[in-house]
Length: 171
Length: 171
Image (cartoon, rainbow over all chains, first blue to last red; front, side, top):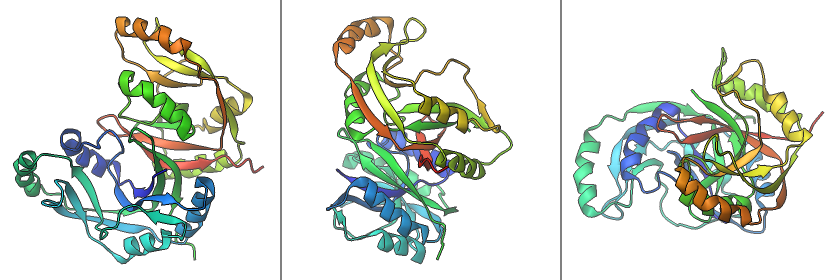
């Protein structure tokens, strides 16, 4: 089973992202607008319920983090995905690090870039058509994230939330 | 803002429901397969975060419940929706009652029938075409639900999870 840990930004930012996702993101129907913190991953030698309980304990010690959207950017030419670039900070990277317990096996191995995807799986033509327009849009936005969610993927692609981890910063 | 409290059944049952929902449920893209416990509702005089904290406290005192699917049924002729009928029990009804705090204003006023929708917004013809086939399918299934989720609805329809309430039964 495939899992992920994500943050859903405020409704305001999700609504904003969805005006693009609805038209340009092939994953629009699979999950609301989100910033992946960790994943996709599988669990090794641990059931979901037990893993969730351990992750909850770790997350409770982490502090809320600032989600600062800087601008829209693109992963092209590697892949035709357009995203809202989120400024990395110590809290985001520390949270990711803390949640990377030994039973978590990451499926993809690439450098971590905090972002919210707003368009993907487009042809080169589609991508080049909209990237200029998207880049002119002003996405500057800052908010505080105080919770992340553990999700698992269904057979046909959609993601379901299993647990919510509150970042209460209890030491 | 519109809210709801729902239970997501096991991945097994969600996958099963989605084989129908993918083809016949106009809300397939808006939310994973679920049983609504309460809602849709609005909050009166209470912010989401505070409301969630109060609901969490109430839910923690509730016990896990048995979700027993009996068979497929239809809401026609009231509406062309086909659903998996869930046997009501004291835990489900008690949970719904307990979560109905005074700041929760239900938007719809109809009798509560625990169910998982698998097809909706069909024409009469479509409905009549598939109801026979669906009714012949054997959906008998029982599982234990130990958590429900507070969701809110985005502008264009999809639902996002805000908080997870564990039904730990602490008295």
